[in-house]
Amino acid sequence: MKTVHFEKGADFALQWDSSDPLKRYRNEFYFPKEAQGKNVLYFVGNSLGLQPKKTRSYVEEVLSDWEKLAVDGHQQGKHPWYPYHEFLTESTARLVGAKPIEVVVMNTLTVNLHLMLTSFYRPTPKRFQILVEAGAFPSDQYAVASHAKLHGLDPKQTVLEWKSREGEELLRFEDLESLVHKNKDSLALILLGQVNYRSGQAFDLKKISKLAEQYGIAFGVDLAHGAGNLKLTLHEDGVDFAVWCSYKYLNGGPGALGGCFVHERHARSFHLLRLEGWWGHDKVKRFLMEKEFVPMAGAEGWQLSNPPILPMATLRASMELFDEVGMTALRKKSELLTGYFEFLLNQMGTHSFKVITPAQSEERGCALSLSFGKEGKGLMEKLNQEGVKCDYREPGVLRFAPVPLYNSFQDIFELCEILKKHVKSV
Ligand SMILES: *Cc1c(COP(=O)(O)O)cnc(C)c1O
Image 1 (spheres, rainbow, N blue to C red):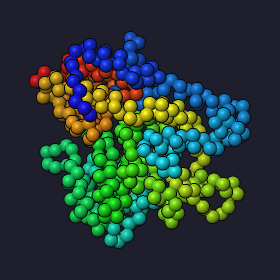
Image 2: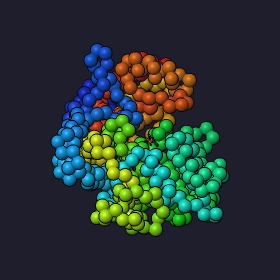
Image 3: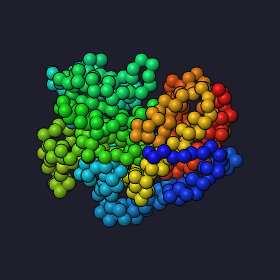
Image 4: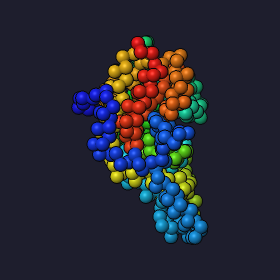
């Protein structure tokens, strides 16, 4: 990001909001209200994104087709259900920097992770280890450990961790490099959260992908905090697979459907073992009800079931917004918002918290994590009472995600005014 000259007065925020090219999108979302009818200051879009106002009509379209057409909705619905997931393919591909054949919307994140591990983690007596980042999201840790067990292996000997150094919060690429180099003959897979959910540190997928490729190690990514947050180029970066959820930055609604990316080089690798279901079967022949499974080419070949249309409708509404704005413009605003937030935090000149998220914008998404130690939990409750929604992660960390689609510079200004009241001034 170019150096921007931020100022600490209230005027600055107002001015930047009024010249923000994306300002109209704030009004496309519902904000929860406080008792006095004021919008809450919402900084948990990394946990559950807000509801786009148009979502309701997309859901109503499906309900109405079901009401009036019943089974014929599969072919005759306004957006027919039979190919409904395909209405999401192009926008999803643009979102993550992929080709349409590489992506599919299906299931939820952890389910997709299991499907991918089934195909891309095929341990041999020599190559069986899985490398994850220390402090990976628990679901990812459970998933890899369970695959080790499914193959009769001991997770303790199978799962290696990329750890931070003594006294440091963040992970260093050179430590990953030496860990991979040291275990190059026994590593089968690297699985990383692209943006760490707790520290907010983002990893360079291209660099890691090259490293993995050099030693013939499969590389998978969890994009739970990356999708809709960073500008992604999955195809070009060359990762083998990626999975994500859509209820965080993607505003697909609680428990929304997840996404899955499988690199084009595997699109016709029909020898890859997979869990099979009729929706992954060649769609031309699906209703011939033949006994033998013939997978579709690309990510669609990992689908299992006839998908839930109502949650696809909510996602379609929000993906249209992403498509309209585009990740380039979104990321540009995001860097400014977060940069402004960081600037105001630094202006407080206090030692009562430490920003643990990297200071370089290429190494983070929109969220900043502030470590308060013992004070963290109590502070979070005070902020809540003042109409600030943020969240707490053990131990001692408050996370704030200024989301460029709907948060404003004014939101950040108000947040920092409230924070100032509650943190010690030195
Ligand atoms: C939110 C999150 C998940 C959630 O998984 P679900 O299967 O959608 O419940 C998984 N991994 C990471 C890194 C997350 O942040």
